[in-house]
Length: 423
Image (cartoon, rainbow, N blue to C red):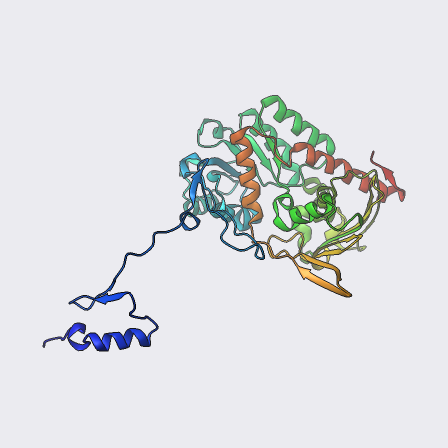
């Protein structure tokens, strides 16, 4: 069987009609003998706006959109894999497996190179998934073997709260920088010891306050600091979620491991974010605790905490946290010229930023849309950059220590029923 070619089926006039039908004109075009469309004149070369240029080791593009549109984000500038900071992940619980390890796919400055876990079976599976060598997987007893792995420059501690101090101090003793999950510890005394240990060893200590690296909360902080909408006169923060019926067996409900209930676990987001956004330190706290009587989940830790923070500017922030209500992670700011609602302020993703203000002679609400950003990747990259450039992290150990002091004051206020001075 013989096959006829396209050129034998479509002669030049038919080709021109076909090109016109599909929206390609023939002006400035020529057909070769083989039927290939060719440009009759040379095409213009690309402009600098299209090609960009190299500046200080980064690719930079001039702005190509008009002033009415938001500018485009600059291209990412990832370090070569061999130059990224190597991190050992200490503990393979839910947070490590559901959030932290997957976030490395979006990290441009760091990579996981070692694991520490009490479960050899689980560690073997995770190591295979993330390309970590078997010899870089250690038990807790063998933690100090990380000292001999030159790929490991830092550790990320994701253990229950009461174990943070031990592993921060062990990491510092072997010369590794430390990123520690929040809350930093179970007491201010422990937090001070952790800061001192890292100072003696001359290693960085950063607390993983992911909200500091979240774009919507960063934008609101800028609004407040710049007084974009005038003075901040009110702040309300809520972080609640439910606990399973058998949660009494979980470490978060064991005071010896957690240090407390909803306050250090999720209420800390309210406390720390108010401090972050306002740039102020509270001078007084007042609090009330409640736990349902007879509920085994709250035999050792609290269910609900209502607390207020009074600041030097006169601002009073009202905060509420609980394990007893349907998930809600919301904050609202009242300013002279606007209100700001953030219905998902403390979520891992899906943040929204709604601004209510006067629009001519009417009430209006606009939403500020920001590009999504993985908070864990952002905090890891900041930490890696601080290690590489020898800078102090935005959320150092002292930040965690301050929150420990304030949480102790909140518990004291709830115990006594009176306000407690904090400055």
